[in-house]
Image (cartoon, rainbow, N blue to C red; front, side):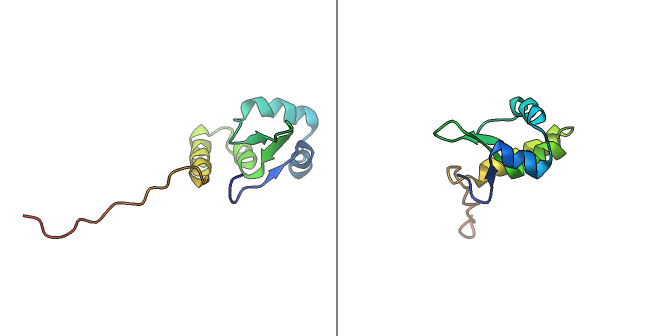
Length: 93
């Protein structure tokens, strides 16, 4: 599970965002598994609240939502983190 992100069942998403079952079922095919939602080992759908909200807000701005997806992926423990640039060690010739 990712750090700093929360997941809800479809009923939790419907309640939190005040959408009906039909709307949620229409939205899910537009979402990316592993980013917007996951499936539990038992096959149950769990939706990432933050990514779902960002998708709703940025439906018309794929560039903005792409930045959110990059942020999400970079926050995963499995994503290698860059250590930054090494400073050069002194006065060269």
